[in-house]
Amino acid sequence: MNTRHIVFTKRAFNAIVTETIDRDPLETGGVFIGYILDNGIWIVVETIPPGIETTNRRAYFEYDTKFINYLSNVIARQYKGNLQVLGLWHRHPGSMDTFSSTDDGTNVTFAKANPLGAISGLINWDPKMRLTMYHVDSQCHYTKTDWSVDDGMIPENLLALRFTDPSGLPVSGCSAETEFDDKLPVTEDRK
Image (cartoon, rainbow, N blue to C red; front, side, top):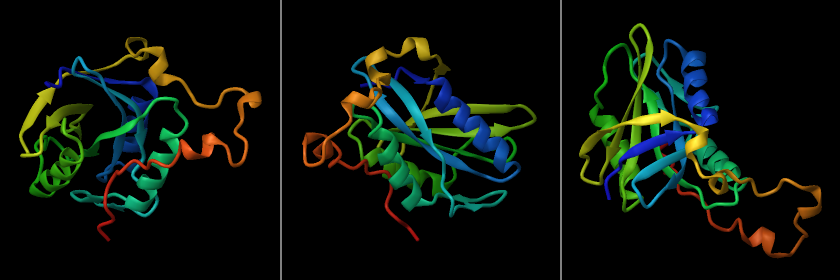
C-alpha cells in the first residue's frame, strides 16, 4: 500500500509547532500515534512530546523512551479506536532536511515495527518553520509525502473518546480494565 497522504489533527500539529518553539534553537521531536486507513491515508491523532529526560543539543536529540512509552499508552487509551504508533518527527538545525545515519537507524526501527512502514518528519527553521514528511519502509527507503492539517477530513469515529459520560465509568474487575492490556510498542529503552 502506498502512503498517499498524511492528515494531522489540529491538536497533533500544534504539539509539533509548540514543542519546536519551546526548545529553540535545540533539536527536539515527538512520536505520532493514530490510524492507517485502507486508502493509504495516515491520520496523526496525537503527537507525543519527547519527554522529561531528553537530551537536546543544537545537532543532536534523544527521546526519553520511558516517558513516551508511558504517555503513548495513556493517550491511546483515551480513544475508542485502536490507535497505533505511526512514526516520529524531529527538528534539524537550519536547512538540513535530510536524515542522518542515526536518524536512519531510528526510522528503520519504527518502520520494522509495522508491516506498512512508518512516517517520519523533519522540522527546519530557516527562517520560517517548515515540516517535511516522509514514508519510510523497513529497508530505509524514503518517500516524500504530502500532508495537511484538517480535523474535518477525519471520520468522527476515529476521534471518539472512550470516556465522555460519568455514567459510563468502568467498574473494578469488569472488561474495561482488560481493554487496556495491549501496550503500544513505541521504542526500546536505549539508555
